[in-house]
Image (cartoon, rainbow over the protein chains, first blue to last red):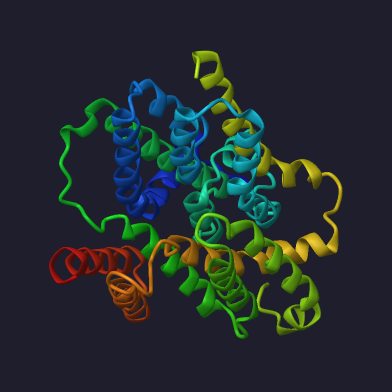
Length: 240
Length: 108
């Protein structure tokens, strides 16, 4: 089918549809981003640091940790190992998006670069109508989220501790987002093998390894269990 | 740390992030067919990932001390109930978050 609309119209439509999906991320990223900027500011860094780091790293947990790294002695190898361990979960996102990102042209590079937890979750789970361009939809989800994080971090870095918070508990917006996406996935399945594996493996590893180092063992457990139970999981046909 | 060392440290964080995000796309190019096992993982992984991310968000909640994770549990129940009832993502997230903020600011 020939799309007779101009690129501008296609983009505008995709942006309009993408925006509502990113509203919760806006709340969460501004809260966390401003907190991160303030944290850098009170740790003695100019706003240029959170500004550039939010733009280039675009991964919340690593950026918070990077502040600690910048304040300690120079240890490039340790930095590399820590960063790879924290970010390893993106390997799973990439494997899940191999098909979805196909045919998105030059936008693919940015889609991959900006694939943080929240962006991946929205882009994977959003029900995009047939007449909306998938590539542009995902592009705008990524761009909006990137901008929220960047502007929040920069603002926090500029304002420093001028802001006093009466927003205790606002960070729960991220938990709520993932609960909703998890629930939607759950409702789509007949058997819940993969969902249960994720929750139980993560909970078990959290108890065993503690909050700071449970992600990598969790990923290993998930990979093993999904591999061992491939036959029954594929037979259950929980995915199309 | 000198400015150069700072730039290197941040640069390593940037490169590590980019590497983990791009690696699957470099290993499995769209020109060659993706191996069956990887395609299976691509479909089976997301459900497990979302479960893992929920736990990841709750990793600093202590069951034994403080408020024993009660506000988190209640707020998650509100999110789930709202979502099963109305299926409106924004409503479920906003409702659960407001509930959580009220709980930790006023009750616990």
